[in-house]
Image 1 (cartoon, rainbow, N blue to C red):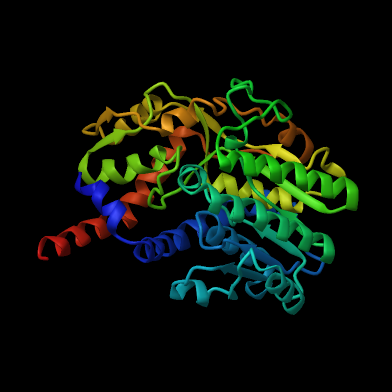
Image 2: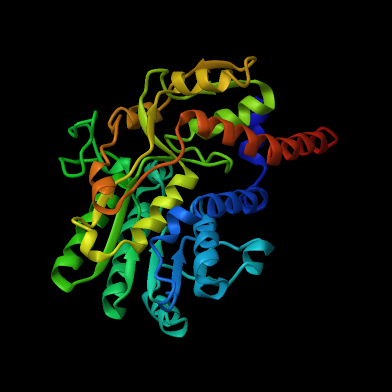
Length: 372
């Protein structure tokens, strides 16, 4: 399909520039609609923390930076990556080059920028990691060792995200509790279990303020990157562009999901939760669970002409080992986590974001390509 070719070939820099335009509008909605909910977690009289975000040009990094900059000031949130940023990333606050495999380089950044909190997003995701296991080990495990040790040395609060991929076929799937057997079958999942356990060890051994949330599939209007849960993103891009979509998961594959605004809200609340309220250092968080068939039925209420076919690939094998329903009752009990978006609200927001900000650009790109 032309839409699939466009999503694959438009290029990383073009995709990132699309993201910045779309997210600048959505971030305003997030921070304005959630101010009352988020504000109770901030001590306005305290000195704002200086925050370093690694892997900052990925799905969560730029949006996380915008939310934190709104609450703590532009200069107090340092975005970093090894990828060349677009101009907007340089305009909104500090951006620096940071290689998580370079420990001395990271030390210099923490000292020179007087960092207090470290948010570690750098990682190879599930499907990509399976294609290059040695690289995933270096980035996801060796890189984690560097930032954990750095946080210990400089007494930093450190946040490392985990995932539903940290569970495996031996885990209870419906529901999946906070503490249970994990045994994942991907290098991404193995590295996340390693991160969870190492962070908890450093907390109990050295008093490190380590915090970790296990996220479900995170849905945003970013162009899909080929991950196992990305069908729930790709269907909006393909469906709005060509009114059809071929799904790589079976119709009844149930997985936990979360809209990006809820994901960022959970991260912000958890970062600011008082230590005495945290009974654990690793928590499940989620908002909903649905199957491709259920999601497509909801989308068809708004796009009745959408045609869906199914052609499961290797990602089905990964999905078959993951939780179907996430139990996040401990996060809701301990630090008051609540989600805002259900499937109906998610679909409305995604159709609006993708339709207004991405589809016109895809169409212009197709027009240009037709003349080449």
